[in-house]
Length: 244
Image (cartoon, rainbow, N blue to C red; front, side, top):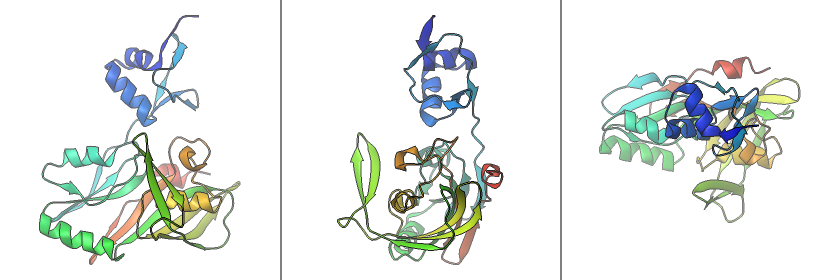
């Protein structure tokens, strides 16, 4: 059986460069059947046929002289979005596979004021997630989080040595050993919701880094943010609505 590296086969099939094909695999967009291709340099049968998941477009939510707010699609890094808006700077970040409300600022004066709101926990941040198992009652997780970097990748744990972090979890829909929840976060540490949900043994579906089962994406969406007197909403993705 003739074999070839996965990224080279994807490049041939899709008519893209090797580096573009490798990027598609690294983002988690390439499948064989229902299995995600995990290793770009892995050897596969030369006749392998791939399915490529398309990235949704960035949807604008709001813009004024101080601020640009977009609905970030999954599989796009926050930094890539910043590069698309010349002169704007990220006010916060979302993980690559997390979708939803992302804010960029246009001037330093507004940025300083907004960062002050984040620091004093005066920004309302509401997420939607599908998690493993059944959550039938609200849960308030008030546990400090310590974040470390290994091989340029952040990893967080609940730890007494960490920084304060609180996540309120409210069940919405229970369906076949999984629960759709609303999460309201305070402080906003790296991977806070992912870490806290893993801590209570209800990891987010698709979040393999924190114990969730494999899925097409990490099932976490930044649904609503309130900053000063403004409220921004990113509608639930169709994958969340129909994830039964």
